[in-house]
Image (tube, rainbow, N blue to C red):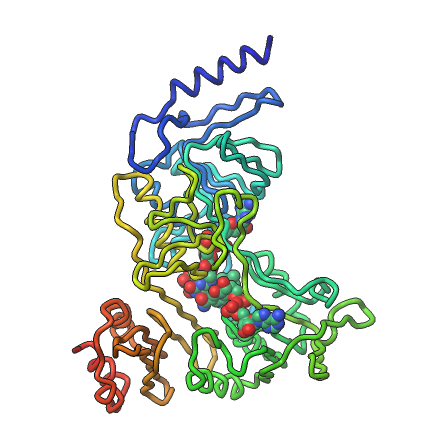
Length: 480
Ligand SMILES: Cc1cc2nc3c(=O)[nH]c(=O)nc-3n(C[C@H](O)[C@H](O)[C@H](O)COP(=O)(O)OP(=O)(O)OC[C@H]3O[C@@H](n4cnc5c(N)ncnc54)[C@H](O)[C@@H]3O)c2cc1C
Ligand SMILES: NC(=O)c1ccc[n+]([C@@H]2O[C@H](COP(=O)([O-])OP(=O)(O)OC[C@H]3O[C@@H](n4cnc5c(N)ncnc54)[C@H](O)[C@@H]3O)[C@@H](O)[C@H]2O)c1
Ligand SMILES: O=C1O[C@H]([C@@H](O)CO)C(O)=C1O
């Protein structure tokens, strides 16, 4: 008897609250919830209704929330289901300002909540409250039913959504336990808890080994020099940052790292991480028999899209992640995916891709929410943009910052001697400029890069090569 009347209450509440907006990209006839959502408290029938649910409270979620607010559609309608204890923050800070030595004013929350990285408001937990956005902290989604339009959280909350945005990001790739991947003193770095754990190791560290020569490897190795630690970076390729840098660019950075005291071990594969008598990691054994002593190991060997428990909405087998169209719609109406987890059409180069960088996390979130809330149907037309900054800590003798826009395909022309500038242009077989990299540019020079990579001018290689300075080269490329 009790459950029948509850069912009736639910049905009435839902039909009275159907969305009135009739917007293009939303599921029609989904429950709209009054400002403070109701809860039907019978244990086996405890759906809570939310009009919009974002799963994952990371970088993209922060920008999505801001876009909901900008459209006046957050208050009482939006719920963010987050695995972590913090409001969304700018993840790039974790391997930059967060790792400054403790006496050099390291970045800490609430300093870098989104959207400060793109010049927006600092959205601390009070910001979400003020805008009527519910954030469920430390309560990850553990299961999902697309027919019933529900997600269930680890605490047992069953939330029925109108529209669902999956922004679960990625997780660090790990070494298996059997080769020592979980030993105390072995660190992966994806979130604040990881960074705090690393800092507690760095405080007592003497010898640090960093495995992986990509973004994390380069940024953490630079940070370790700020802590004056004996630092070795180990990677399998024949140069650092091999997925983007040319051998020549890499050579300049490798020399800089070596000048700061970093040992570089290239072409090296890991056999195992071994513990000392205290059970903490003590050494890294390489497949070629070399032993690297280390009391702290940081592993940066890539990331994997966090698709679970949403695999059923459709994955992309080539690039991984959840497949979406140019409006971030998955194959299931009313379900969207953004940020690192989304496999989307990269219109400019006519291919599917996933991008694990913050600029895309921000832009995909904004584009998706705008599409969801308005009649906007312009396809996402993303221009890949990657950057890094290292040796930024106070007292560093050489701060380094680079940006890259476009596609690193074709032949390259390099101008400059890294003293401090260098520019590299990627030019395809039709003489089109496809990608451009700049180290130590001014903000005006950096602002030319997206224009060049977007417009893909036909380049006179001989003329470009004749440029005597980076400034000249950028001027020549921009005048084409
Ligand atoms: C250390 C580090 C430094 C970086 N630095 C740069 C940089 O300098 N420049 C750059 O361009 N990019 C950088 N990146 C990449 C950039 O941070 C990511 O591209 C960006 O964070 C992606 O945003 P996202 O929201 O898709 O994922 P995330 O920011 O990872 O957020 C996803 C969130 O979802 C949560 N989650 C996962 N599963 C669930 C679930 N089932 N239920 C609830 N919550 C869940 C996760 O815990 C996480 O909080 C860096 C990444 C890392 C790890
Ligand atoms: N500035 C930035 O954009 C920035 C900074 C930090 C992190 N991130 C993001 O964080 C994520 C993780 O970064 P990352 O540096 O770990 O990934 P990455 O892909 O940049 O680099 C991975 C490195 O690990 C090496 N590697 C892979 N498998 C290995 C193995 N089994 N043993 C030894 N080495 C191996 C690769 O060869 C490469 O050198 C990525 O999504 C990245 O985009 C970005
Ligand atoms: O995009 C970024 O955001 C953070 C920081 O600017 C936030 O304060 C950071 O270090 C970036 O590279």
